[in-house]
Length: 297
Image (cartoon, rainbow, N blue to C red):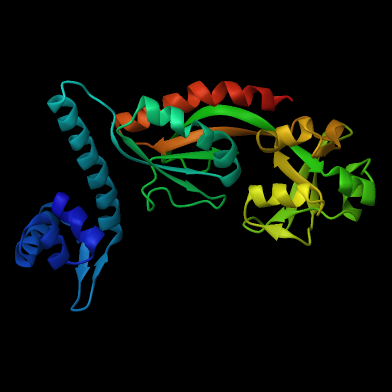
């Protein structure tokens, strides 16, 4: 397994051999033995490059998890205690990571100094298996049944604008009034965004076409603060701006049930590495109570 992972990570037999102090021929023979035992081709060979097959990609992900578990178990035994350690890859949206996760990193590091956090902040959805993400924090309904999830909490979403925008363009009184306003949207979703509103006791989805788009919530928040338009953002993101008067919530009476759950999702493997378990427990302990005030604020 170690030989195979090094082939994938270095891209050649010779480079993997240098890392493992083996000849390229020995590396090639070991790979051949693995493929013969499994009955599948993991790597396609050519004179110019090695190409990992789909079966090889799945096998690589499993090998990495197993090797990490072995390393963690051995270190725990050698130190007389099972101490969580190793690299923990975390993926989270830019707003949630900036305002809620990053401020907690010093505390987590103090508790678990042997865990190396590798945090990526992006609002775009990434392939968690391909990117080898251990834990991701996601908003809204979950679509991938191959991952397990733990609810951290939920947050109401609010339609907001800056006081300067409201002073210049007026305050919408009904959802229909938004058609005459500049509404900001995301460029990684459908070109037609729909905002839910409660009208005559029924949820109506209003299509919003904005002339300004962005790929992350933090940029949208800043554009809204700068008076560039009206946006729909999670309260976990803008509650402090509303409290400080930097933003004004609009049409509150029309969207009391516009909420989304926030989950920590992780691989559906049989044995969860200790570093993953302690991190998720930490999120539930520290972020869970904080999110409760955003569910019905």
